[in-house]
Image (cartoon, rainbow, N blue to C red; front, side, top):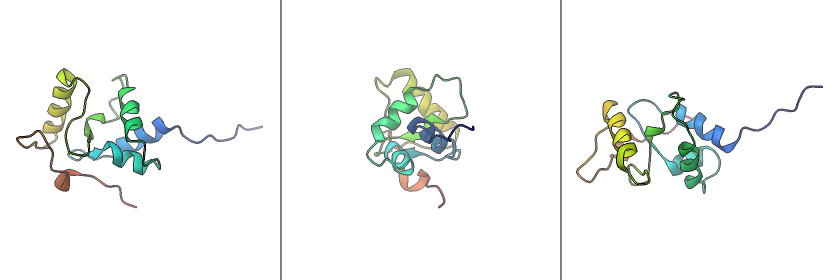
Length: 111
C-alpha cells in the first residue's frame, strides 16, 4: 500500500518561496510567512533560514530582509556583512541608513 502524501513542513515551504526570489530582489520575513499561508509566522521564517547549514546555496537566504528593508541578523557582524555584500553583488543598493528601497526591490510572486 503506498504511503499517504504528507504536507510539506513550514520550513520546506519557506525554502520553496525563498528559492523563487529573483536575483536583485528581496522579500521580507512577513511576506514569506504570508506566502506560506502563515501570516503571523515572520519570526518562524527567520528560524527556518537560521537552520540552514550553508551547504545548500540554492536557497538565497540573503534576499530576505526585515519590514524596514534592513538586514536583520542577530549580532550583525560577519553574517550581516556577508548578506549585504551578496545583495550588493546582485545590484541591490542601500541608503545611508542601511535600508533597501522596498518599493523598488520587493518581489511578489505572480498569482
